[in-house]
Every structure is written in C-alpha cells, then in structure tokens.
Length: 94
Length: 236
Image 1 (cartoon, chains in turn orange, purple):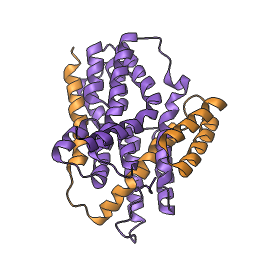
Image 2 (tube, rainbow over the protein chains, first blue to last red):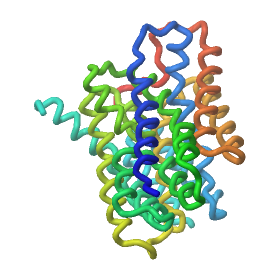
Image 3 (cartoon, rainbow over the protein chains, first blue to last red):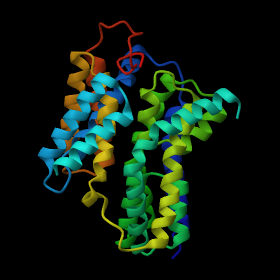
C-alpha cells in the first residue's frame, strides 16, 4: 500500500486549517475581537504548562529554570536571551 | 524581494534561530520514527514538506506503524491541527495580508512562527514568512538527515532540548501578562491544558484550553475600550 494518498490527504486538511483563519477577514464583532486578543495568551500558556515538567522526573529543576527565564523575559524581552538563560540553568542544575 | 521585504524576512528568520536547538533533534526523531514505522525516505520527506506539522507527523507515524486506515490518519491530523484556525484568525487581526500572501503564508504556519510573529511589535508579511521558513528549512533538512542516518540518534528528551519549546512560549507569554485578567487567563488555560493533556492528544487539549481561556478573557473585559490590545507588546 502506498502512503502517498494518505500524506496528500493529511496535507490537504492541514492546509485547510491554516488558510481558514487567515482567509476569514470579515468584520469581527467587538466580543470576538476581544476573544482573539486573548488567543495568544491562552495558547502560549497552554503550550507551556503541559510541557514544562518533562517526562524524566526533572520537574523541580525545569520549573526553577523556567522561572529564571520568565524573570529575564519580563526585564529584557528578548526571546534568545530567555531561552539561553533557561537552558543554561536547566543544563547546569539537572 | 524588495529591500524592506528582505530586511523583515531576515529579521523574522533570525528571531526563530534560538528554537533550532529544539527543532533539529525533533525533526531527526520524527524521521527515525517514520522510517521505523515503514515509511520510505521519500514519503518521510513529503510529510515534512507537504504536511509540515510536527505533532500530526509523529502521530501519523505511530498510526502507520499500528496499521491504521488512511481515513483514521487523515481525521486525526485534522483534529490535531484545527488550532491553526485560531492562529490564522488571531494573526489576521494583527497583520493585514494580501490574498496571495495569505495563500503562501498559510502553508508554513506553525505554533512557533505564529508565536514569534504575533509577539513582534511591527509584524509584516516578510517577517512572518521569515519566521515560518526558519522553522520549515531546518525541519526539512534534518528530516532528510534523520531518514538517511537512521537509528542510533539520541533521544531529544534525554538531551533535555525538548525544554526549548515551553521555554520559548513562556518567554513570549510573560511580557503580555500586564493585568489581572491576562494573568488569570494564562493560569486558567495553562491548568486546563495540563489537565486535559493527561487524557487527550496534545493538539486537542491545546485547542480547548485556547478557546476556553480566550472566551473567559473576552467575558471579563466587556468594559474595556476596544483599542486596547493585551497581546500588543510594549516598544522593545
């Protein structure tokens, strides 16, 4: 059995989800404007929390390193600096 | 590309480079998983180039290995990727794009590119495309490398590089938490995603937590002037 038709099907549904939101640029009522403004906050938090503890029993160290990175981010607002500080702390303490 | 477009493209591309530390080992791990599930080098690569969605690619490799039907694999992919609708809607509020730009930008839209583009004070099509291709290029190059090298590559979780992703999104999130409602939404969505991810696939947990958190945020800010944008970063 060839996997190609399945991969093309996966590609089609994935592209559909990606273009749908970008394409619908009708005028959005105020409630949904506010909804969309909270999307990054809700989504970023939902990307962070489940992945934070990790699967190797290092939750304490990872949370400590993340707290340091959060502090650096609050002060300096630089993505690369936050990642560098967080990874250095994690690798130094694990 | 005209000079401003090129300049923005380079800026977006460079902003994502710190994430390569996590992307490279994960694309290698995906390639090894897909090859051991019985997919050929070409199919493994086509999935990275045409589908280009890490979570869905990993789960498809697992489903291929388990002998799942094509319909099951395609529907799982759809379910895991519905969250992109939210990203598209959110981006189109911040960043007006021409129809042709939408068609191109859509193919390369990922969690990482959305995060980096939305957190920029002056996003543009060039910046978005740069951030997007800065995920696409290493993802595809290291899919190929992983396909050819095969078994014996180190596990990303053992190296600890899986930590790059929560760290990156945390660093993007923190400057947005400028009020009680923002912080409350983050705590709610984070806890909800954590709980749901114990029983549901990650992409689905993310979608539900994202929608519920945003609804609560919108409900708690009915009295706010509509031009105030919690996601708008202060000048950097």
